[in-house]
Image 1 (cartoon, rainbow, N blue to C red):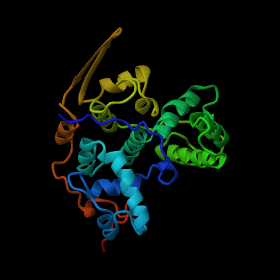
Image 2 (spheres, rainbow, N blue to C red):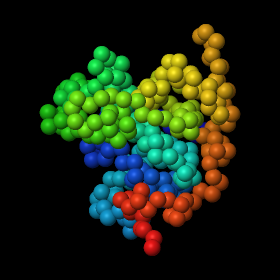
Image 3 (cartoon, rainbow, N blue to C red):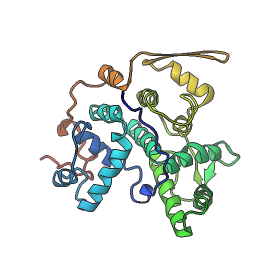
Image 4 (spheres, rainbow, N blue to C red):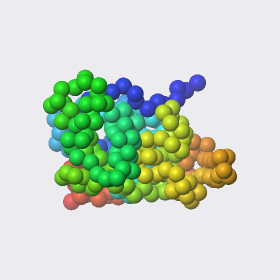
Length: 274
């Protein structure tokens, strides 16, 4: 019997060295589907992440494994998804960072949501430094709290959750495509996480809640959602995420470099063609 994947619950400091990393994640999906072990030497020699040091490549691989390999059907799906829109890619990287980092999950799925619903939907670095101190219950020095606040805000900016690099920073709702939402729903169906399928930090962080979420779910082709008073009916068109990918994504799991914008990959280690 297979073990159900679980969202990370142990607080760590990986975010201090590795943010959202959308393009590095994209390069990782391109090169592996998780079926074979990848060594740092292989990724380094093949320039998966550009001209990075071996130490940086080792760290990136550790981060990518925690964010994607920990959820095998997710990595296999992402590997075969060559025509993902930038907004979808950004949302998926955001959700997987949430899965792998409880600090970022609480920040983006709780704190920023509360700020967005408040009288002033904005945030400052000083406010985030204070929040990190409360979250960490005194375990981190002031310099570490400041570093965490900077990294949290940078990741939130990259994810489209805040709209500026300067204080005060508006807290906003990013666009989420139907395909991204379907991916998340099928992924959450296979994961043990805190919350419910319709009320959790992953959906809340991107403004998917209440009646708006219900309207979005009713419009998804891969789900059949209905609600009458407190009774919710949800039928899944596909048995799991792999079946969803099989039906909706190209059958060819290999992504040709000629199908990918050279500009997009210029910083991720994929050699440019003439």
